[in-house]
Length: 447
Image 1 (spheres, rainbow, N blue to C red):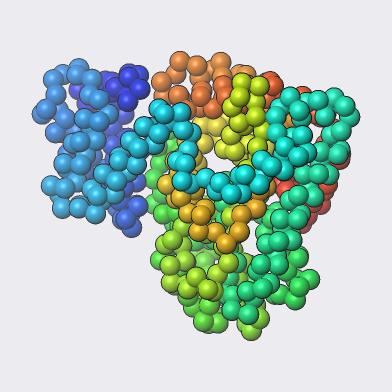
Image 2: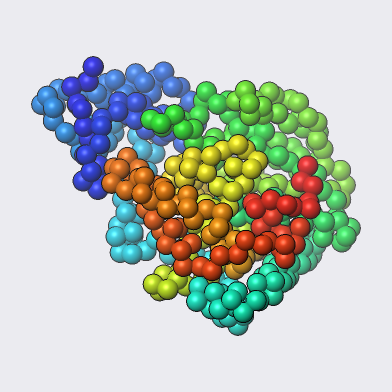
């Protein structure tokens, strides 16, 4: 029984002390450098708590920074220099993000694809879709089907451009990577891109990266029992690199199979091989992450990056956040296809954002081309589907120090949905729209 009952968070909030969090933090740092020994992490966490008990009085409320200082000390003194370094780097990055947020920057500025954002804003202004008020006026004027047509046409044009760029490099390409953060529309975009490239005479072999997950028991989880699948270290990057290198050399490779129900990976299941004029097609969150394909020369891979770069200003002058669009998209998709309660998606989203900021967004500038997958008509469709839920979550998590992130997001999205004109009839949305991946009713057979 620990003598500590509470911890002071950086926000000043006082929350119950949970010793499991220490073991989880240590294990996460170990996973980031290739270690997967949960017993060692648990043993080191006991040393941390022992040092805390030596240093602090009974019923003392340690600050989270004080605990992290002791974690660093224990890691270094036990000879885990690489894990300690990763933990220190994580603390420094987190500190920089908090400082940036305190200056009213919601994301690190250099990670924003400014040229693409400018073109997206220019398009939105020219179609009178750059503010919530303008969109509402067009909807009230009966123009919702026209908005759908304009947005879908812009997306299809960008797909045409990407296909032409890939075709131009097809003589030496070995793989095309479709990457982007969660719910950016990778599945539909990959499918539609493949159809275009087939018409241009190219042939593809798909690689399903989910089969490279480590066994569930090796994943980090938090004090709520939530597993973190968002980090690239959840994947066996070493095996992926080995397989990509051999496939690029046109060798046969037996890829593993991952059973999500059992949380277990089975090796050497499916043989695949690239033959002459065939290209590997990879749809992955982490396709741009350097360690994902470090063995493959840049000339042999085309990297496509997707993000819903919506340029629509709210009545309060703030732009709608791309992450909020993707949160809603994932809620809708997970509830239909994964039997995952939308509230669970909200509570898990801090993992999604943390991993994106570290492992996805910083590499968007390395993409060969960026596609804007936002649809200005999606927000009106979301209001009747989820506004009541966000109102409930905003009320439920207000003042809960353990759920500050969920409250902040719920309050912000609620405000966004309240401002937009609701549309319930989605019949004007094409069956092969990227949005059908999330709202249902797609005419595409993804399997």
